Length: 403
Image (cartoon, rainbow, N blue to C red; front, side, top):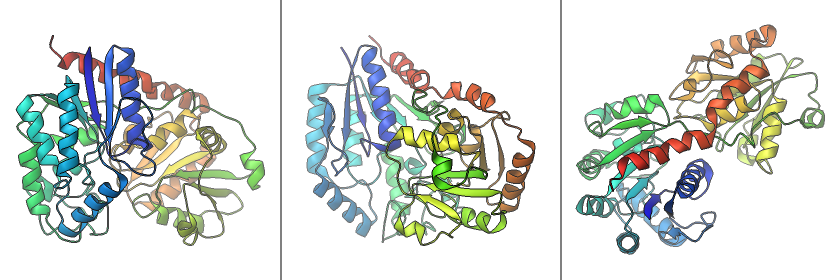
């Protein structure tokens, strides 16, 4: 029986769902799939072949060590050794890496093991962390040191993953040493944007394949509700924003500025994924929705909106764009990362990152001209079917295993 061992920072969330979806499809195709991740309050085992790499307490201790030393991924030797012992018993044909950051596993030990045992590797990059000294994105800092070696890092020390000591020059060199030289490793990126960056990094000698993220179209589709009636916005043009964590990176300030510019009698901004801290930064004319009860409720909100606005300043391949289009709502986004790759000319438009004037003009234009129909959005959404897209991973597994 063919075996796959996947490793990820989380068991849930967007990358956790991707890991699980790929594993489920692999099992349907005759594989035995294991999922490994660190323990936390939400990272709970859900199936028999889950492997919890370390306890929540151990995981937090490793993060604190990384925070105060600047060395991410250099701790957890005992729990990593236990995991490698399990791999000896499992003997997977392929190890599938997802997010390896946040210091929950000892990276030099893991990569030495892979090289020693000549195990085939698929590595899905969900951000840029694998080829930088620390940061997962560098658009906002406008830094290109990752191309030749980091140091004197402009990335804020309190940003994820936290580091109070700048060891980016050393970490860049260590990552290059650890992550290169694997006999058979394929890099997968969800966006062409990230694939192009990989080809400029020290990972460039590995084959790179683009496999877009997908969504569950049985969940995200036009779903009627009383959302507009409940919030008294039946006669308003609803502009929607959705994020797990709101801040400058996701464009919270952009929505605040738009709320000052747009006519209150015509427009209403709705933000989903907020909290009490975010509410303190919002004007009264923005509707704040802290958390949705389930994905069906989120689909209802997408459907109720007239336009999904995504002023993200750093992004790979945002799921929220796909979810909105699948619910029949067009997308307006900044030209950043892989975000512009999701809407085509039939279901959305793109403006330069940070250009709020252009964003405002497009909102007004789309309001007046209504160039994007629900039917066109749904046609585009057919390309987001997760089973079809994640099936490409299974094809990749097949192509990488020799019998």
